[in-house]
Image 1 (cartoon, rainbow, N blue to C red):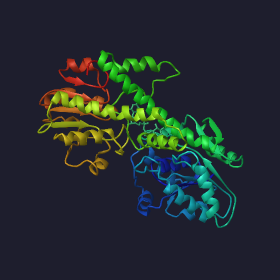
Image 2: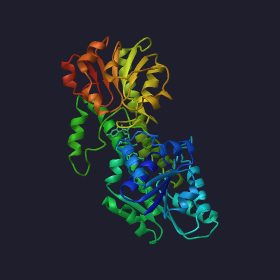
Image 3: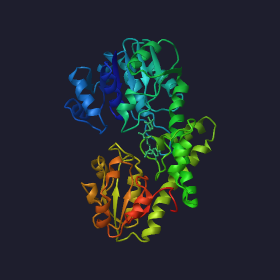
Image 4: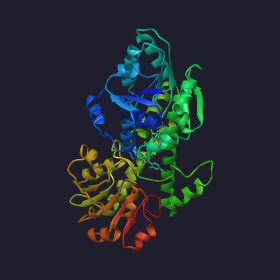
Length: 432
Ligand code: UGA
């Protein structure tokens, strides 16, 4: 099929590339001419495992192209996907101005029937607004359908998630676009849920909020574990084996971050308020998340007492493993808090150092994870990169002025760490 994706951020670029990989002909549109130039030249604006190879392969095969012209994208495709950012306003509500302007641009370029699919995360009832806008601004007065097709990709695993989705959600107001949408997703062999647009839009916010709730739930349990001497990983394993609960997203941590959960939670609370419902449960999810970081900082302060004049090593800057994304990263938040307390930082991340440099200043960026501990008073793990499990602990113990390790992601075994001579403090495992 001929498909156009408007917006080449994480979602747009992965979507376009994975559609091309499945055999569709895809045009990716971005109004940022520099980015288009970079993509055309074989450059990548983001780090996402496996993506670069797929972009190259599909560009070479002639199935994937880039342009900054919406007109070109609309004219040459039957299905137009909107994948532009929906950032947050200061009060947590969603800024839909990009969705609105792209809807107008699409409307202005339409000369025949098109299916306009929203992939961006939007408040319930946005599809109705998109349809109204297209109708108003469509000069040619042609038929169109608006479809909601929310995205469930995780950064760092986006290509895999796209190729093997748990489900595909398609929200429609009429049957006309259903067959085409089923064809778009036919290569992926995933269950397709066809529903109304409002339900499709709600599914996305409801799913992300539920996952955030799951993390806050286990983080609250981690407090009880610390107070009772229990082990949160054992509790999560025991809970998770119940198939009704599931083990995933039950890893206690210094809190969730990223460009999705924090933003989507605030948005969903706002959306609920607009619909006349006070979603207090989600406010508690936010509170537990903020509290988790406070508790971690407190743990560091209680152990090291005064940070002024001390040097700390921090492993991890990305908001999670497998990404170079530092937006709303708990690791960056942690670093900034430690800096405020007067600590000097030596930091390392396998992928996110370049992006971190724009937001985290006056720290020493170290190129080798095994060199971070050199001369530090303590080492801190802030991101769950699997390679940190391979840290040379013997070397780290010798390099630290005192063998203290704060683990915000529970990567090591407390008993082993004690045996190796570390004062080891993690999340929800034994006395804090
Ligand atoms: C999330 C959802 O998982 C995707 O399904 C969704 O499509 C995406 O948001 C989106 O709306 O675009 P993402 O933000 O990429 O994906 O990251 P997650 O893997 O969900 O992790 C979010 C945060 O939760 C990270 O900071 C991670 O470290 C933390 N986390 C995750 C925990 O603290 N504990 C866990 O058990 C799992």
